[in-house]
Each structure stands twice: as C-alpha cells, then as structure tokens.
Image 1 (tube, rainbow, N blue to C red):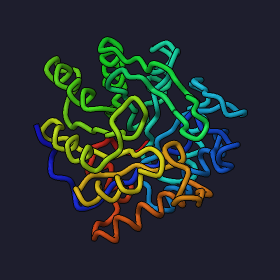
Image 2 (tube, helix red, strand yellow; image 1 turned 180 degrees about the vertical axis):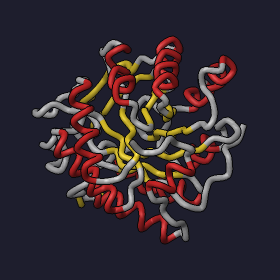
Image 3 (spheres, rainbow, N blue to C red; image 1 turned 90 degrees about the vertical axis):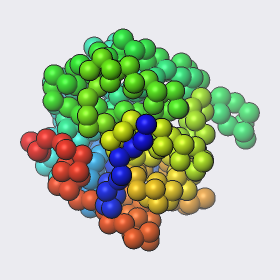
Image 4 (spheres, rainbow, N blue to C red; image 1 turned 45 degrees about the horizontal axis):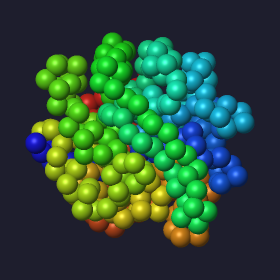
Amino acid sequence: MSAAPQTSRCIVTAALTGVLARRDLCPAIPYTPVEIAEEARRAADAGAAIVHIHARTADGGPDWAVETFAEIAAAVRARCDVILNFSTGAVGIPREQRVAHIRALAPEMAALNMGSMNYAIYSRRTKRFHADHVFANPFADIRYFLEAMSEAGVRPELECFDCGHIGNSEPLIDLGVLRRPYQFSLIMGVLGGIPGTVRNLVHQAGSLPEGSRWQVIGIGLEQWKLVAAAVGLGGNVRVGLEDNLYLEEGRMARSNGELVAKAVAMCREQGRGVASCPEARRLLELKEAP
C-alpha cells in the first residue's frame, strides 16, 4: 500500500470551530452561522481552499439541525468561493441525524470517522481529564455513512485517528462501498489516538491505499511541526481553531485566517505553491461548485 505522489501545490483546509473549545478559551471561536461564514471568508482570503464545518448553537453547544447547516452554507457561499466540508462526527447522536444535513445539502465533502476510539483531553497541570468518552464508529455505521454520501454525490474525507483506522478502509474497498479517489485525513495528537510525531506521520502516509490523497491534522501546538513535515512529504494540511488555538507558545490566534496564513507561509518557505479553490477541486476530482 502506498499513497499517490502528491501535487506540488498544497491544499490548505481550515477547520473553523469544532464543538469542544469555547470562547472562554479563545474569543475568536465562531458560534453563529454568520460568525462561521466570516471566519470562512478570513480563511479563504488567507489561502484556504476548503473549510471544515461543525454547526453550533448561539451559546456554543453542538447543533445538528439541517436548517443551521443550510444557513451556514448560504452565508459562506455569499462571502467566498471555498469547498464545503461538513462534519458527521458526534457522540450520542443517532447516525440518521449525523448524516441528515449531508443528504439534504450535498456539500462537496463530508468528514467520515473511520473507527472507534477512546477520545480524551487530559491536563497535566490540573491532573484532570477534561473530556473522556468512547467515540464509537462501528463498520455498520461507517458503511451507512458511505452509502448516504455516495447517494448525495458527496466525497468522504476519511478521518483516521490511528493506524488501525487506515486499515479499516480495506474491507470497505473490497465491498465496493469505498471507491476512488480516496481522500484521507491523518489526525494526530488526540489522546486515545496516535501521538503527533513526524515518525508516525511518515509511517501513516506510507500505509495508505495506492492512489490516496492525504492531509495531516495536528492537534495543539504539535500541529506546526506536522504541517512542516507534511509539506515536505508532499501532502496537504489542515489548520484552524478546531485543532489548535496558538500561532506559537503564548501567542493565541485572533482568527482562522491567521492560522491559515502561517500554514501558507510554511508552504512557500519549502517551495510549494498553495492551491486555489478551483485548483483544489480539480486536484481532488470534486464536483463543480453550486
């Protein structure tokens, strides 16, 4: 198994908000559809071709209403040309609800978690777990999501938190429910998943099915060394306030745009251009924008 040679142009994704971090941690985290759309604009202006989106309530909680995702999509489309990637990841939400907005709105891409895991956040400072749950994604659910995405004409973005999640793609490929082109996200640094080291990234990138495209998603400040490594390896990158709040130790980002701008600068320092949104659609073989 080996990934396809990656393009000289790097595709940058911005994960705008997530569901866990709140404004008491970072004032820039957007909640409302308009706030999320403004962050999408800032990210696109800085060089992001894709925005990964969770919906949130006005007070920052998770929101799975199709109407909220529709508001977000309309607000983003009114402000900028970016590829929309909607999340389906959740704990304790029925799978039908987790994919309803994908069926109804058919964004270009949708995130698909490729396996189950312990998902935790631990503080060495306080000696406490601030999150601790089982993130369940059995094969029956993964197949259900893949079939729903296929029916809607939506590209699955295969989110892998560990090496076994990459291996989980094999039976799905054999069954014919996961079809090329494959788009993998290698998520590194979540407690319960693979640690965020360059050694692990090299191993994971080399373990992908033949012909795969991939991006790295580093959690916390370890993100930046993984971005540098992914750029050097020819992969793509994801940054944003969902994954990391800091430009460097002690310097919090004021927007998703600032995080994207740093990633773009890192690409150019290694001699790689950054893909525009139309270029990213072509490179990833995505459908045309609505």
